Amino acid sequence: MNPSEKLQELFLKFPGIGPKQAARFVYFLMREKNNYKQDLARNIEALKDSSNICEKCLRVFSKYNNQKDSSICDICANSMRDKKSLMIVVKELDIDAIEKTKFYNGKYFVLGNLLPFLTEKPSEVINIRELVNLIHNDLQKEEKTENLEEIIFALPATDEGENTINYLKKTLAQIVGIENVRMSTLARGLSSGLDIEYVDKNTFKEAFEHRG
Image (cartoon, rainbow, N blue to C red; front, side, top):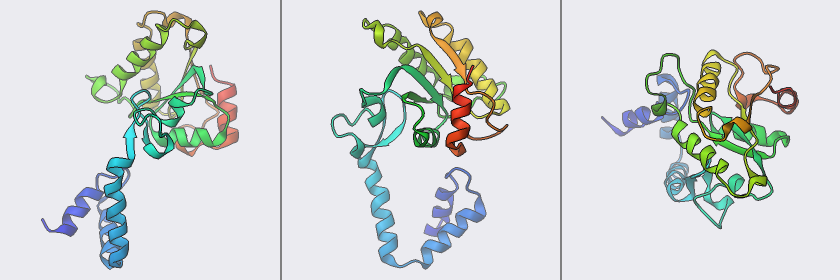
């Protein structure tokens, strides 16, 4: 396999990229000047040292946003965030979209995926173990004024999204102390099939205010 074929294979791992798009990327790079290719390669290499996965919410983040503790993202490290609410999303782009609305000030958890129907091993598809541990540890805090009060499911309005929410509710219901935590879902003002990353401020505000 020559370098161009290998690159096409690597580009195919990108979300939403098919064979034709992967080939288009490779031909674009082949035509570009060397300084562009060197700059691209240098910044890709730098990602290894400049990014990390938050040990709390599992969000991928840039270490430069939080110099004090490179294992915790800037949102989880922010003491001004509302510790009583936890919004569950599929991916980081969902968080980016919600943060742009400036309407929600709680914490997040990145699920990593949606749960297809008839999945035999959910823990291999979504970050359910980490979510259960996060909530369990939060509910065991001695300082009750900071305990979790609401879990908000901000998942796509799709069949898989609904299936995932139903599974999460059943699983989380087994955690000791969870009976005092409200579980809510964004109102279906969100268009059917809409991915959270494309939500605008007004639509999110409406869905958030009428969650239930």
